[in-house]
Image 1: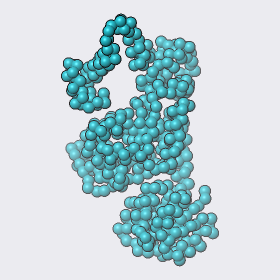
Image 2 (image 1 turned 180 degrees about the vertical axis):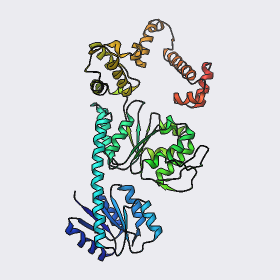
Image 3 (image 1 turned 30 degrees about the horizontal axis):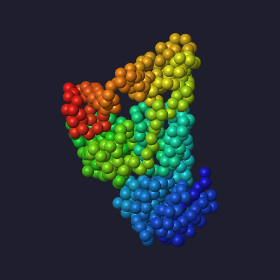
Length: 464
């Protein structure tokens, strides 16, 4: 490893002493005498920065915060001739690696440097081990279609940049795999990857899951609990289904994204966390903003870069590759033995519309490999209803063709309005029934305004 050190200090004599001490030991040392030029020089990614606490054009602690936010991998060691308990504590809380007081002992400086570079080497080793484990144990995204190649390119572009990312796509498309790929190809890969699904946790518990709580914050809080954000410090937090957060929690998440600080429930103490946030949703957040269900400012905070994961029906050329991958996984991990698909089974799988996307095809293949007898998987082993293989378009074509001849003979048959009205009426009635008559839930599932839903129910005289 090249040992690159940057000194940001306005004391030329200190710079001379450090260079004289470290350069003979193989360290490459550069220096800047002002904070602004030092922060710019940090863009060259030195391994270690020696940062003075007081500089002519700024506060070293402010510089530390900026460095930790923009270059989390760089080790920052604070140096000062005016050490105080408060500044020492603050520097360590803000992420300084160590704190050395001037005039410092040269041997002590060498020891600190040796320890810093040893830790850097261990971090790199840990990063490589975690990446290897991810590549061998975590299901990988599979595809060679143009739309998936674009997703891979987008991941490559954003992984190294410490910015918030929004991943969109239908359920089962693999948004979590995109988030993991971003994390394990970023400078944060040695840190934790923590995932939380906002839709899977009751809204009144989600805040405590994210931010943690202190003992006595509420009934049942018998001890302090660390939240997911704090647990993800120096790593990545993947927040799935962000559209499910209520407005009060949205406000607290906005504050964290802006300030990188929060207060656990039951505490007024400010806690900072160096966490990259990746959000995901299967709903239209822009529509949620227009309806007042999601804060516009939070939407733009999340939507710095958006990666759209296509549904499987839009990349059917990837289906053979997915089938091959999942059958191989089943043989290796479930010990089902090598299997192959019959011609009818393969044709059926390639024509099927896959409303559950990649998750569905994985489960179908896994189940078929386990339950089928012999080495050939027949169509019947797939356990998918034939009717499900039709898309909405196929279904409507099939149903309408029986009536077109008769309706074509009629004057003013008004086929367009008649069919749209009947489909809309049936759709609203079905979803309303599935939602047990709950109009709020129905409007959310349909993606329409609640007042519009009420008007349609009245117009079509739909009984809940």
